[in-house]
Length: 95
Length: 492
Image (cartoon, rainbow over all chains, first blue to last red; front, side, top):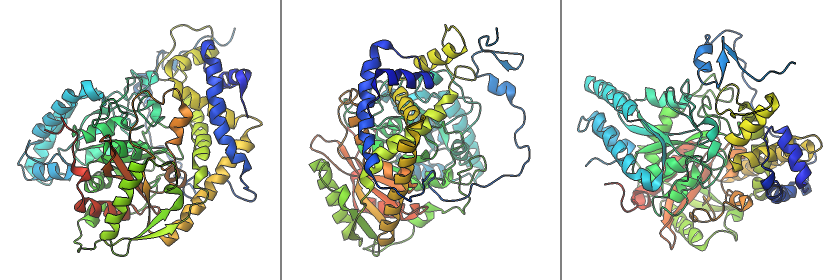
């Protein structure tokens, strides 16, 4: 499956990555080569094979429904680009 | 320094009070500074913190009853969170990020007494096999600084090879501990998925990411792994099982044929065309040595292992595209200076913060997860992942370990594959299967090619049977000298 330049633009939009238009066609041909290699999978017979999501077929353990972490908002917000009054600041989203 | 610059050697000298931790740590810091211009192995060097930790270790050692690795200098790959120190993942996105807490393995190694000297360079977000995808520039291979060190834990491998630190942590998602270990001539172990906690390991592909160790030899890997491994309720995939004590197992006595009874599986698929002749020759010679030590080689088949690369390059990017969506310029990390609205803030922040390889993988992941392609690619790859796992389970019923080369060739020249990502991916052919299956694997030095570059042999074992891998590697290293050779200009 060859993605083409329009498809690369669509993927970049979905992934929230602004494209450098000068590199879009080079990127499309790189992705084309990689997806060409991946396309080999399509010919493999996997009828009746259960998908494997995890290295161990174990049931993920549930923990007790108890508070284990204290409030660390100030510590964690020290890493944020813009905060005020304990809130993360973003551009206005409601007119 | 007259003491051996190994984990075991320094730990023994520190406990016997022949040297102090301040001396060992100062030695490590001096070596790091001297090698930095040529190798660029470190992103952060923490003189102050390391010496404070060393002074504290010396107090503990003087009182007696110090933990086993008290005062031993160590470096962490810069993808592991270290409280109060930068954790950059070698990305512009996190160039100024200071971790608010320690990764579980970082805390465990701190509790075991190690002194953290710094954070090692790597491929951005651990995506790469050459360490050329770092925001802070590539790492040089100590055997030839114009060659790649392998990736993504390239800084850790170069630091151990050049004897800057006795050991360093790495992480392995598709071969990122084993490939640089092979290319730098050091020993690297990727334990079973679930043995070491991923808490505080900045996520790339969560179903594959595995903390590991790079050191000079298997004994040192065992010492560090014993300290790192352990259940952690904060990682839902961390497995709750009794500690193995790999170090004690290695120190058992053994006769002239210490590997008697060990069945070594040789998959035809690992010795076919595509392996450089020097690599094939070195691995054959290492297999002869394992046989001389009592091991028995048996032919096995892994018919679906040839699909491991396409499966990996569907699943790992899919998980990456999801994991890396957290970098949005709002909660942490880089934020674009100018933007029109919230969506534009996301798009510009991510365009500026991520390098080309990270973007490529996010786009591939987005593609295989998008409507219309999910069943064809993502689900299909998960099904083939099971077929590959079944192949390994069948093979490991007939043998105890699976042997082969770690990489198809020794380290290539810096810059030669940057323009061809697909060629770079194909170099992961022997390492990705252990991540798909979750099996443990170790790379050990077993020779050099015609250009004087190290070659690694990989052993893969059964789930949670690191002891057999470490034992085979240790017996091999008692009988050979490859792991003792130091690149010229380093180690003194």
